[in-house]
Length: 385
Image 1 (tube, rainbow, N blue to C red):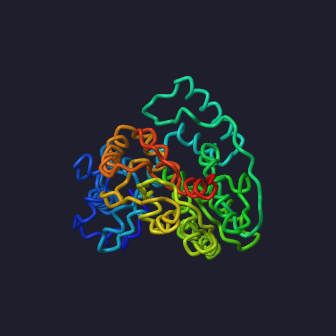
Image 2 (image 1 turned 90 degrees about the horizontal axis):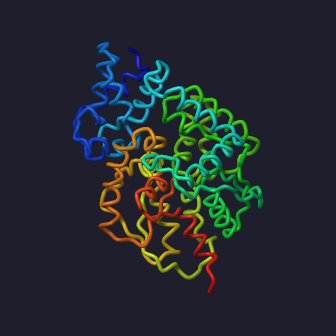
Image 3 (image 1 turned 45 degrees about the vertical axis):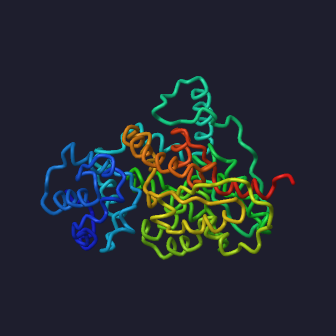
């Protein structure tokens, strides 16, 4: 089977194994097939030697969280993210991964009214305890969502799909922080309802490209920066140039910034205030740390507003959320999360800061108190004195 993988990218892996400690699925299973090195070996066997794509082979590819923690650890610079995305896209085309039911859920992401209706029904079901706990759906999903407002045209604030439906309060906090720095903000809202990150993660290449093209078209009337407060969305949008392979897409990606990344260069514009009396552990979302590699900016922006930032000792190991991974592989995701929870408990913070909706929801389902860094900063800026 042709996995449509570039031979040079595939052959860059020398099977050294330095990726193994950074792979969450290998860490919890000890199974070589569930490691980057093992998966790349299987890719070679399938693409170069026409090895059969058995259930075990599909499972090895399907259980990758796609955290990409292996990439910074790789001395050969293997672009593992591209390898697994291409592999999963081919498998999805054959029906081996991403079922019809799952594709229906992804279809709804780019249809805001359908998504909001579905989210409201899910909120009702969650409150009635009709949703299995293993899915990690919070019982306090919002019925009503605050109204978006535009305060200026300095920047776009990308609001996306699930995060806008479930965590609009995070967008509101981010907007208030930006406005406190004197920045006029235009939330993208239904203008660009979905970036395609979850589609890419699921191997749905054509829908992902459609979402990317629609987002670019919607936000290309001017060249203002596009700020993103969801690490997964930001990583996907920064890789539009690779996804679409056009100069226009690359130019668009150059306008995309993680909100912390952008604010870190403008700290002098933010007001000073009394710090929150909190010791905060920062949980780095994988797509902020390993893909965008801007996780230091979160600390730079957060530090002036909290008493102390505490570092975890697990070197940024994945929490197990992984887009829809925690829903599709709940037991494996829980095993991975348990390691993260142990790391958090070792440092005993007052609260955990995480800049990705999937991570925060997954950790909260494991009993961790989590807030987005923008929520903490907004709280500090608007606390009563």
